Length: 333
Ligand code: FES
Ligand SMILES: [Fe+2]
Image (cartoon, rainbow, N blue to C red; front, top):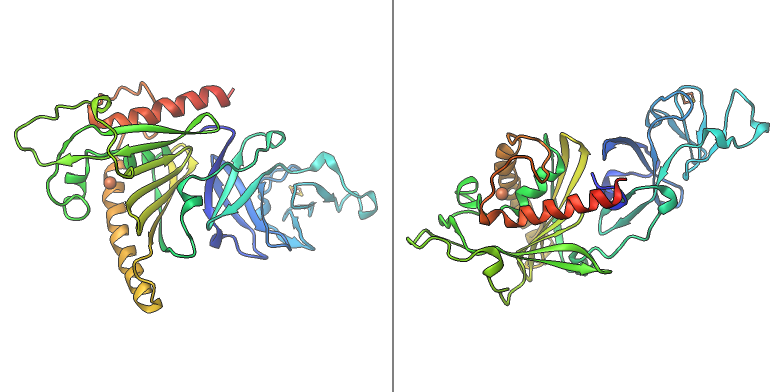
């Protein structure tokens, strides 16, 4: 996993006021809860005293109370009370818990996985910031995949599997030959952060794919697929229909998928809800078609040099691997 990045880690609705949520993310036990002001906060879910899981404790006067010896922690992780030493002794910095910066945007909770001293502002989120959320309604499929999140991402950049894996859903039409695909990085603050992909599939008409990815001209249409590093993705279906997904790392062999279908075609409440319910069923089916194959891939975590033999249609996957490796080398020292 790449250090010093903002990851989408949860949906807002999962963190409820007055309740602690203990989850595994980025290989760590983490505790999320909302302070009295409703703001989400995150602590490492392991007590600095003797390692008990804080999320099994209680919220007492706006502080997290460890279930073992009752140490209390403020939202920023400061230890404000140690019962065995006595209230009069006040805060005890020696027992401070580690905290991570978190922010909420567009129904997702983002966590900055890096050194707290290096806390950075959440950068723009690309299309997620641009989506008119008051016009679009969405429904989310949430699922657990037994692979590293890099494999889940690569599956969503894979433009050669649709005709087979999704033969009776989004891959109907037997368009198995891939021209290109055209790939381009979009830069934010001089960093390549968004991978834009233009997909062009056709039936096998006897002509092999003549054009390599770098020979294909950028089509004058919106890119079909977009990956925003480190873990957000969009399938731009039309002006009025999108799929946005977050691929959340749990650990090196497990991920959580948030697969949102957005639409603004139907606005009347009952019709819209019926449409979204049908879309949820369809998207679950598509997502399960992918998961069935991807969970069998070995190794469970992808990287450059894992011994795979790629063909030209895998170009977006190769670009992702290169970028990810460069970021790991830069940030994980
Ligand atoms: S382990 Fe948490 S207070 Fe002792
Ligand atoms: Fe797929």
